Length: 198
Image 1 (cartoon, one colour):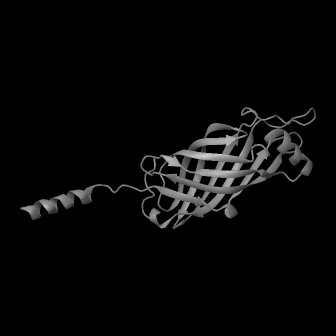
Image 2 (cartoon, rainbow, N blue to C red):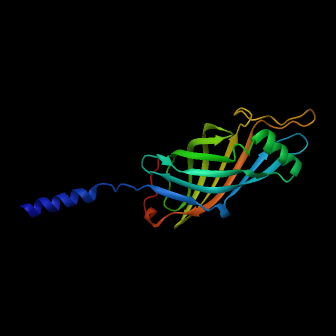
Image 3 (cartoon, rainbow, N blue to C red):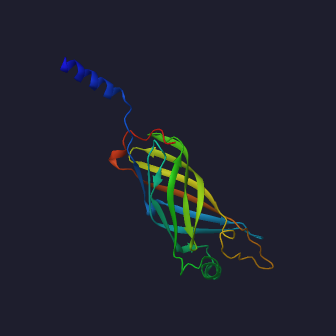
C-alpha cells in the first residue's frame, strides 16, 4: 500500500510543470554598439557611445526583471570636437553626470529557447541627474549560450530637463533616437527554460 501511494505521488509530481529559473543575459561591452541620431536642419547629427557594463535578469514566468546597463556619458562623440565640447558642457553636463544607467523592471513577451523573439523591456533610465520610466522593443536572438539583441528607443532629452542646443540658424530635434546592437552570453543554467515570459 505504501509503495502504491509513493508511486502515485511521483506520478503527480512528474505531471506538474517545471518552474523556470531566472535568466541572466550578460552583455559584452566590446561587442555592443550604441549609436544615436539627432535630426537637425541642414544635416543630421550621428554619434556613438560606449557601454561600461550590462546585465539583464528576468523570470520567464512572471516577467519580473532586474539588472543594469551602465553607459559612459563622457564617451559620447559626434565626430566634431567643437560640437562635442558644447554637447558635454551645456547639454549633458557629463562631468557632473558621467553615466547613463538603465535599470530593468519587467520583460513582456514570450522568449524562445532558440531563435528570434520579439519582447519589450521596461525600467528606468537615469540621465542628467533624474530617473525616467521607459519601455522599448527588443529583438532577441538566442543561439545556445550566445545571444544577440537589437533595440530602438527615443530619449526626449529637452522634456527631461536638458538644454535645447538649437540656435538661430540651426534647429535640432528635441528627441534623440538611440539604437543598440548587443551580443553576450547566457550561463549554462539557462538551458531549456527560455519559454513563456509574460
